[in-house]
Amino acid sequence: MKILYLDCGMGAAGDMLTGALMELLPDPGAFLEELNGLGIPKVRFWVDNGEKCGIEGTQVTVTVGDITEEEEHCHHHHHSSMKDIGGILAALPVSDRVKGDAMAVYDLIAQAESAVHGVPVREIHFHEVGAMDAVADIVAVCLLMERLAPDRVIASPVHVGSGQVRCAHGILPVPAPATAEILKDVPIYGGQIRGELCTPTGAALLKYFVDEFGPMPALRPEAIGYGMGKKDFPAANCVRAILGSAGEEGERVLELACNIDDMTGEELGFALEALLEAGALEAFTTPAGMKKSRPGQLLTVLCREQDREKIVKALFQYTTTLGIREHICRRHTLSRSFTTVETPYGPVTRKDSQGFGVQRSKYEYEDLARIAKETGLSLEQVRQRLPEETF
Image (cartoon, rainbow, N blue to C red; front, side, top):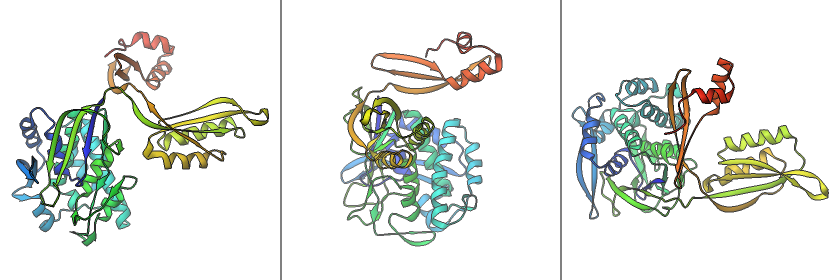
């Protein structure tokens, strides 16, 4: 399994993430040319060697016309709506996946701004994060994530800094309100370093792409990158990205279980759906004999450790249980990806899985069922008429 680990001990910003991820590529220079060929209005990317506390890395600077992003933030507050951002992204020569990822990152920022300022998302006009430099940062990171294609992204708890920060609305506490809103449910911490270490753009990129926040797992590093910030602090101001193989030893998960003998099948079915929507990896029931010889169900839920509180709350909310048992276990899974296959019946999604020396593919049931209903064929007949399920 390919793991990307992000060390955010000095926070994160879009340019820092871009620099760190670029260093993981075999040819960062070619990627820089690609970025400058995207045609983002008036934007140009510049790359320099940066040094912080004796560590060398990549320092990315974005200029809009002849203005750096720092100068733009101080003197030229651009006002862009989500519609404006969507138009810019739609015109870029990048994949639909990158466009979708970039819009999803902006949606996180817009939702945070909406909550902080008390106005609907459609009325949000971005300042710092809506200017062309932020478009550049977000698109660059989305492109890099597509190019690196990690199976799992893990990040350390995020150091947000302390003190105050000056922005378009005045002097605000660190982390800035929008940043704090975005980082809900993400482990963060402050410290002795005064200043804003995590920007709204950096926070949104982490929130969107990171699957898990915690310590670095056991892995074999294959590439290491350092993305340098612009400011100097007593600690090295950088994001470190480590790309490596985690082998096939599995991931650590929680198993939560409870016994139930007083819920109907409909109620249990609803509870299972609610648990999956709350973030459970798996949720299932097993027939069990209960006290007083009552037939009942053993309800078992697997979840990641950071989702424990949400799942426990959902279990108590949607079931009649009075207690929950918890065990730490390890889950072994095949890595999965999805491919769209063009067929005479239209596009069909195929799930590809591999690992542990195994490769297998399977068409998604929903697409098979749709074709069967449209053609009057059985599911087996539909499978026989589609290209072989291999990759």
